[in-house]
Image 1: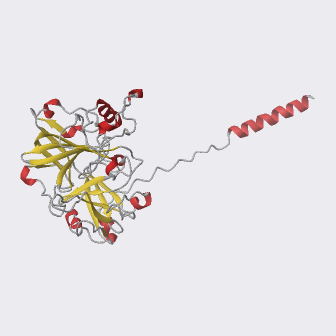
Image 2 (image 1 turned 180 degrees about the horizontal axis):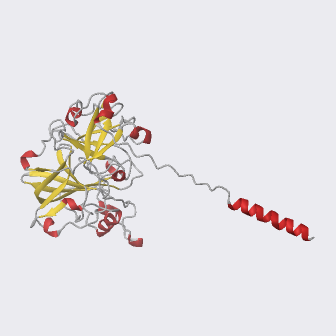
Image 3 (image 1 turned 30 degrees about the vertical axis):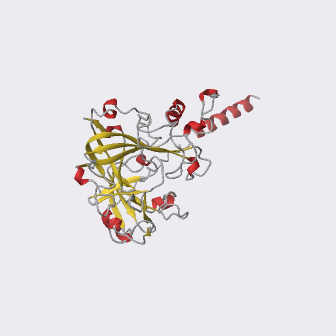
Length: 366
């Protein structure tokens, strides 16, 4: 019996010793491969380099988007989406002008840093215009770069798919900070100008001494479940402030103003077709749960505030999803006792100069 016990103990000690001295797995994981930083030489296989102005000059006119077959452009990123006022897109600019690249991704600031050089392979992409309008009261919109819109509703579509983005948009080195152009009134674009005419369109600019015009524009809908182009579904706020003292309207703020009754006199319909009554006609007497306009949906909406730069009109447009949407505009601006300097992206819509703030750092009260 003792021999059996001793044999067992001896065997256990041997096995323990062997296990203790087995080689330990010490494999080191490889460091992730450094992200490639593209240079001009990497673009040699994509055709000739075009400036943004040369690219814009290839657009023949409203309603005639052009699908590109070769070439590339290079520009620095001037926008970011951190404040939420720019969504799924970015602006780049070179010394000749700026353009919107409809990348179609969210959180772009994490991927394409402000001031970073970006290369765009143009082959297979389309240039088109958004916001152009013909006729005496019309004018140019913005020439954009994206995909061909298969629906035909717009002239360009978002690039969207990761494979397509990665095969068309390449990251270059981080450049020095882009200095905004400081514009005077006579440097503003004319109503038919595009990026082939003015390098300031689509670029980072500063406008000084703007005075509030006591007017807003916003397009609201009774419901998103119906045709948003139908006159019976449209509510236009224009010609005066309509109680809007914030940069835009979040869903909550929109509901508050609606319930206050300040919009009751607004006619429902498109211009020339105001046969659908007023917002006040949708008011009911019950007001259950504080909702006296039960058939009008609450949603976030963009708002354009009108400012004057000398005799020229500037629309400062902010999204209802921007982080600063519900931030009150300084009363000194609203009552005209103070002017404001703004820095952001200058754009065009139907021949009018529009302006997109990147964040509240771009607003300085004089």
